[in-house]
Image (cartoon, rainbow over the protein chains, first blue to last red):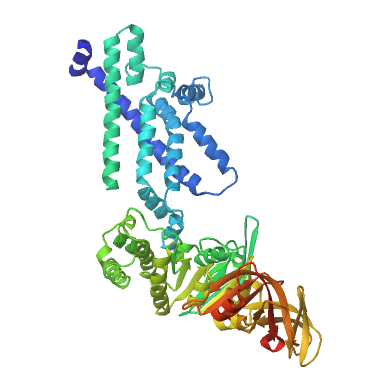
Length: 224
Length: 355
């Protein structure tokens, strides 16, 4: 345990790089998931089109998809002999962003759809009648549903910052480029460095808690 | 003036309707649930587009699918009040009322005074800073109305504005709303399923049944000349439809449910026969005498007529169903009660015929 604390307090440069990388990759993936997932979630909540129920089912399934399976599929796409091999993205941070984006998006879509559906049923029509065009309508509805949307952010970020299967598979856990907190824990555990692994685990928990606390504060303050 | 003549098909339901609504008048669209009245309102608002037809407000064409014109709701000069009000939950009353003005980019300096005036007229001045959840039902209704009216729309659309209120509040708000609507100069469309509201608010009444307009007119026109059983029930009167041969004096109109003796039918052919409920007499034994129409059946309901209950409405399960209006003394004298079989009679001279 002493080693764990020493490591944390030691100011190890490599550790800070790992932490920074973890946050950066997951943050970018979350933002992308929001950009794509919020409009999709809105369309799913409000749209009336054939196959809607099927799509809702697919989103719900996607929310519970094993990250390692996503990792495998993305790996197959990006590997040198795969369809996107010439992009040379395998074992890069970009590949990890892609895989995490795929994991987070169904969560964002699902949470957004639920929060839009919880608004007064005639609110979108009312907005239109008051003179709001499509873009303005989406903006206002997002603000009205912000409690649910912040929940979507927390759910998406929480899922991907803590997953290891996809990050390991497509990132390769390369020490200086694609190692993040979760994959570092796997490495240290397999080497038997249990205090270090525990310290990293504690750090990951603290990080996830800090981000969620920040988002919760924003959410609850706006709710007042 | 709003002119509307549309065909709309959604999910197996077809609406084919046309009517005109004048400025300064409240045109009530009345019908049962599922008759198509909300669809009609949404078409007028531009929330839905018709498949065929034309909707125009004065010289501005809002919809003409054949001519490629489909003006969406946010470009129409409308104010819309939804059944559940749909006030923005996270905005204050003042922000709610101001919303439409901001969305339509009204001049910055004009928004605040217009909102203040709208709040004052709606009696919401002290509540401007509250969120909708902190308002009573009646206050929410006034806020939703203020939000629509502050835009000074040419077309005001009300979707069952009193439906979400409890009875007590409804009674109070009803009177205020009627006074308010009377003071407006726009075209007002008011959708309801309540016969009482139709009669109270409707300068003109448009009756919708099963996706078709069955009758339009003033209160009096509908009362004196109903053209469908639903309209007769709405107005609380009796209607037969049938045909008669030529003749003067007393003649017999053959309806699907029996024969009715009428006076002065005029030319032969199809016609309507209406009988005022007060012309109907109830008997516990088959009445004697001539020139009487007699229908026998059970009493379905006895309802005192407001305000004093001196007169009682009696709904009869006769063929066809009839409504009679008798005095309280008559009810007591005959010991009338629900389920009792009675004979309802009216004279040929008590009927009115028209085509």
